[in-house]
Amino acid sequence: MARFPKPAEGSWTEHYPQLGTGPVSYEDSINPEFYEVERKAVFKRAWLNVGRIEQLPRKGSYFTKELKVANTSIIVVRNTDGEVKVYHNICRHRGNKLVWNDMPLEETSGVCKQFTCKYHAWRYDLDGNLTFVQQESEFFDLDKSRYGLVPIHCDVWEGFIFVNFADRPEQSLREFLGPMITDLEGYPFDRMTSRWHYQSEVKANWKLYMDAFQEFYHAPVLHANQSPTAYSKAAAEAGFEAPHYRIEGPHRLVSTSGVRAWEMSAEMRKPIEDICHSGLFGPWDEPDLGEMPKGLNPAKCDPWGLDSFQLFPNFVLLFWGQGWYMTYHYWPTSHNTHIFEGTVYFPQPRTPRERIAQELAAVSFKEYGLQDANTLEATQSMIESRVLDEFVLCDQEVLVRHLHKETAAWIDQYQRGTAGV
Image 1 (cartoon, rainbow, N blue to C red):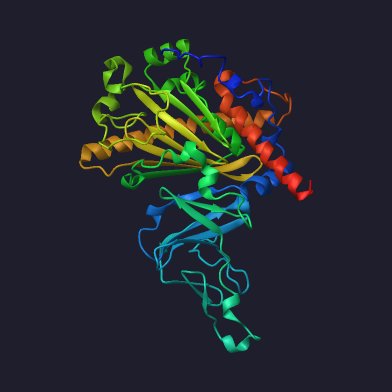
Image 2 (image 1 turned 180 degrees about the horizontal axis):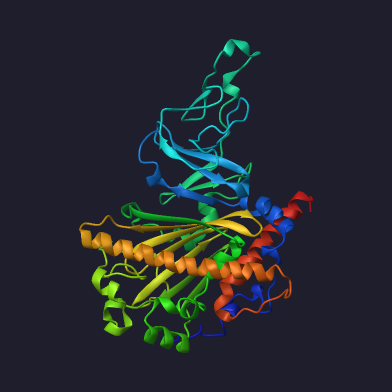
């Protein structure tokens, strides 16, 4: 595999001198006290993606989301005017969880005209207004207009639904995203409705898993067994460097070249890939998606492999050159555990062959993800030993540096604000 040149002057890391080049600490990934501050300083202040508009296909459609990091459950719903609204999933009477099925801690979805509490049958319309109280006359001067559902700030960008738990968000969603992300506008997200979703609890801090997908230094080694021996051996010996990194505000991007799998020699491919015309890079038959937005493939790679946009704090948009995309979410559940969600999006298949090609790509992604998760649990177990307290990073790991430094900066800003500094 070819190595790509460095920027015209210096390394990638040196282009961001504020990050430094020394060893880094992972105390932020093993300290329970740090995690408790991080929940307030980061996850209750940043805009968080909780889903896509296709999950709300009609008026009255809703889904719930369990967000342990914010110590709440939320309801995301399309109201009668077609607008997206988000509420805390709690009844104003006695605090029962309002929307759930058989298991209170499991997420659910559906369509309704109103939400009815299972406990005492209080009812709320899709705009969160309290509309019915069982035996209302038994209450003392009850003003129903004061007891609607508790709203949460929400906004939609390119079909992605974001929430913000701050009393007053410090930035609008668009300001928070910034030009690097908004330059993705125009990508045909609405055509990508063939969807596969995976979820797993990982016994590692959420940042460690994000780190794994912010560099490709590990790929020729960790994922060697996913490729034919001749190819993986050559890749490991040659190494790999991405041709483009970018940091903008709290967000990050790594862009890479790719390979046209069908142009590789037969011994470099797996038999199943020849049968299904697909693999890790996606289906070989690239769909016609029209002109791509200016924010993609900034290095002008030919062939282009993928762009991975890391949206702070815990959301990743990953675009493949073969005409499909993925999202990752990392939802913390403690200082050393989190829920990882991976979702794969393709255009609707037109033939059985296209469907099979999409399924092979989705399954290939799942296998790679499991390899990363398994390694990160081993990492978590050893950094918690505190045998070492600092770790060296190479130039390809510049985005790893940035995530940990940015998290620390948000915490410092929060603590200064709460201390009145």
